[in-house]
Structure formats: C-alpha cells, structure tokens
Amino acid sequence: MTTAPPAPAAAVPPTTDSNLGPMPEWNLADLYAAIDAPEVKRDLDAAAAEATRLEATYQGKLAAIGGDGAELAKVIEAYEALSDLMGKLGSYAGLLYAADQSDPVRAKFYGDVSEQLTRIYTDLIFLELELNQIDDASLDRAIAHKDLARYKPWFDDLRKEKPYQLDEKLERLFTEKGQTSRGAFNRLFSETMTGLRFNVAGEAEPLTLEPTLNLLSNADGKKRQAGAEALAKVFGDNIRLFTLITNTLAKDKEISDRWRGFKDVADSRHLGNRVEAPVVDALVASVRAAYPRLSHRYYAMKAKWLGMDKLNHWDRNAPLPDKPERVIPWAEAQDMVLTAYKGFAPEMAGIAKDFFDKRWIDAPVRPGKSPGAFSASTVPSVHPYVMMNYQGKVRDVMTLAHELGHGVHQVLAAKQGPLLAPTPLTLAETASVFGEMLTFRKLLAETTSPKERKAMLAGKVEDMLNTVVRQIAFYTFERKVHEARRQGELTADQLNGIWMDVQRESLGPAIDFKPGYEVFWTYIPHFINSPFYVYAYAFGDCLVNSLYGLYQESHPHFIEKYFEMLKAGGSKHHSELLAPFGLDARDPEFWNKGLRVLEGMIDELEREERVG
Image 1 (tube, rainbow, N blue to C red):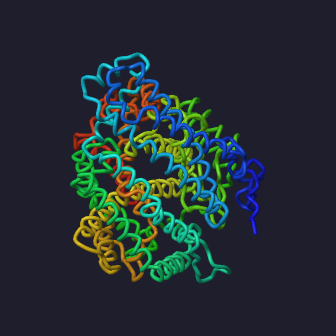
Image 2 (image 1 turned 90 degrees about the vertical axis):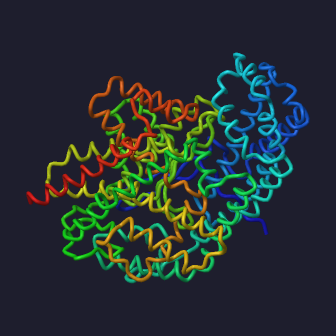
Image 3 (image 1 turned 135 degrees about the horizontal axis):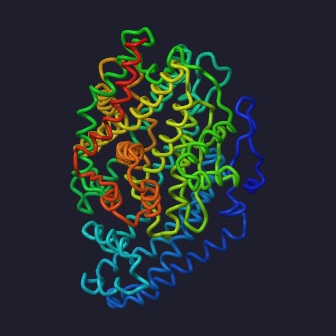
C-alpha cells in the first residue's frame, strides 16, 4: 500500500492557538513544492550527472592544471554550483523531516535523499584532495587570476585540512560508511527523542519532550517537580539505549580522529571552527574560574528569593515569585523583535520582517516536530528558514530574536556564495546573541515596574548563565566522556558520574541535585549530532558582550563595521573580523571583559536586593 505524500508546504494554513493567536508554519515551496514534485528527481539526476562529469573530466588531472587560474576557476565555479544544488535538496529533505519526524513518508524521503547525496558527494571526494596536492607556488599563481582570487579564503581553509586528509579510497569509505555509522546513530537518537512520551502527574495526556521541558520554568513548583520526575523516569528507562549511542559515537569519532591524526578530542572541531585550541582553552579557563562569581553567587541569591536554603535542580529556571506570568501572543512577539531590530538598524528589521511575511518560520509546537529551535541557512540561492517551538514565554521571545539574528546573518552572508557564505560556529552565534541582546535591552528600557525589571534582569542573567556557564560545562562533560572512552566503553553509571561532577562544579553548592538528575545528559542533542559544538555559544555570547559594550560606548562607525562583519560570512578569520573593533580573542582579557558584563548584571540584582 502506497502512502500519499504530504500536502505541498505552501498549502499549510497558519496554526491558531487560543492563547498565542495565529502562528506560521513554514512554506518550503521556495525549495520544492512537494516530495513528489518532478523538480526533486530532476535535480537529483542533474546533481549526479554533474558529479560524474566533474569526476570524468578532472580526476587525476587537477595537480597538472596547477597554476592555470582560468581553468581552475572553471572547476571551482562548477563545484560551487553543484554544492548549491545539493544543498538545496538536502535542506528540503531535512526541513521536511524536522517538521514531523514521526511521519514515515518524510523519514523515508529524508533517508533516501541523504543516501543519494552521500553517493554523489563520494564521487567528488577526489576534488578537494587533489586541489591540496597542487604545490604552493602553483596555487599562488592560480589564485592571482581575477576569476579565482575571490576564493582565496576558501583555499586557505582547505590547506588547513591537508595534514588530516586521507587517500581517496579511505575518504570514500569514511563517507559511504557514514550513512550506516554516525548518520544512522544520529537518526536513531532523533527519532527516539521524538517518539518519547512523558507521563507527567496532573497532565491529562502524555507529553512530548518540549512541553515537558517547558514545565521546568513553570511558576508552580509542583509542576516543575512533576516535569523533572517524568523526564528522569523516561530518560532512565531508556538509559541503556542512550549509553550505547554515546559509546558508539564517541568510539566512531576516536577512530576517525586516530586515522586522520588529530591528537586532542576536540581538535577536529577547532579546525572546523577555524579557531585555535589556545583561544578555546583561554575561554574555558576564564569561564570556569568565574563560576563562583557567576552561577554559584546567582543561584544562592535565587534560593533566597524563593524562600529556600537550596534550589532543587528543577527550580533552577523557575520564575521569580513576583514575576508577572503572562502569555505573549505570537503577533506581539513579532512586534517586539522587529521593533528592537529597527531601533538598531532598519535594514536589520527589514530582513527579519521577510521571515514573517513570507512564511520562512515554522512556529507552533506539534507532535512529531523536532524539539528546540534553529535557523537553517539552506543555500545562498534560496533563503534561510527558522524553526521554533513557540509557547508564549519571554524566553520564547528571546529565542525568536536569537534565531532571527542567525537568519539575518545568513541572508547577509549569502552573497559570498556556497563555498564562502558558511560561518564557523564560533562566529555563527554573533548575530543571534546580538539580536537577543537588542531585544532584551529594548524591553528592559520600556519596563517601569521595579518588580518586572528585576524579573527581566534575572531572566536575562539566567539565559546568559545557560549560554556561557552551562555550555562550557557541557564542553567539559564532552571532553571527559571522549577522553574516558579512549580507555574503553563507559557504563551508564560512569556517564552519570561524569555528568554530576561537572554539574556540581558549574552550578555550585546552592543547587540540590535530587535523584534522577544524573540522567539528564541523555537528551542534549549537540552531544550526539555535533560533538564539541557547545563552546561556540559561550564564544559568541562573550564576543557579543564585548561588541555590545562598544556599541553602547558609540564606537566609531559601529553599525557599518558590524554589517561588514556579518556580510563576510566565512570569508575571514575571526582575528580579521574583530580587528576593526580593536578586539583580540587570543587575549584572556577579551573573555574576562565579556564575563564582566554578566557579572555586572548580577551585581545590579544584588544592589536592588539590598535596597529592597
């Protein structure tokens, strides 16, 4: 029996929630009209044919082309066009799947497209390998050609990969086996998480992951506890599976790292992020040294506000007792973010407005939908798409501002083209965190009630702690797990123990970790899908704090420099992008400056507490 394909994305009407109002579901028709649209097969066939042509024409010959800039430019331009086409196909399949991972038709389509794209990409592995076999002098001559000169940053990055590349047969094997190794376990994790249901005390029906996690910020302490206990129960019931997935992926990474010659467990991520290990080490050391001044101090204050000696782990994100708990309709959230963006730069608001007007956003919570939020850059020839699970909280508004910042960044960088537009993760958070800060500062400035102001300031501090302290703790956990896995398989108890050690260090003595919290490492998708991704959040937050401080100080031509930074995409190293602002990420003081912004907010809350 053949299952009918889902309706074309353009035909999906906005979802209306009684409290939140109409919310958009994205229109993917700018990619493809439907799963069975003839353009999908046409483009898959065209991509396969072009990959075959490139392989037949150039395999074994690129080193000989060497310094011929005109001929090499033709190769790179064709490769770039093919990258865009393949990215379009992969983006459509991925977004369709993210919108409903429980739909077997979408899951099959996603799997089939991924498999075909992997096969096509495998035929192209020779290209980057052979480009790296061109001697430096010849490549320098070629890059001087007017048609190739713009790709110099891409070639520079490609050269950095050279020491870790294998011969073509091994690279083909690694790529093809990726579908049944890392890719398969990533999919197993995603589909398992999507399928989990949580029996929360007091709820009429079982909940999916997102609404259950949302209970941890509920005003009612009993609901927070019920949510936490339901999460612990289900995670615990599935601990053997998550332990197997974690062990398998950590071992898979160790095998890849060993064959490629990466020494440290995070070296491959640093290379991909185009950031040096000492820079990340300086960030991590600065944040860990600041734990007592930041998270430890804040959570002790919060425990007093809640009338407790210590916070239960489910109270960490509880709203303040006198915090106004109102639901923010989608239309109001849209206006909040666009107004904040417009106050900084009308161009920024104009780009963000397209996401709402043209339905580039999928906002409502739905069964089967991927949890969390993201902005998918797709490809430069189309536009980004934002996914939300909007539930009307202030944090959801901040998430909307965050993801739209990504979207604006991706739109501005698109002119760099498929090879140069993608931004390293360390800089990918720059516009998102900045957009979030703009929105927060706008709302805070308009708040006259001392209680509301305190609640907003506390909420922002918590968000920043989650972005900086929490993510560095996650990075520390990952390092310990991957380093321990090199010595042998880890048991669930060992993983739980590592998690608890890191949580106690980072969150401090004011948190009372009740039984069940030890398994909360299981649901963090970044550990599975993007090992060591998480430090990029802290990198971006501290960087933005420094940038925002310059903006407040009226740094000369700040807005123009900021937009040039975003437009650069991945065409410049972080040192080049920060230089116009007089910032240097290699300097520990750079990180301490960013952390002092957070510390200053906690100081402000402490002063208000004394006055109160």
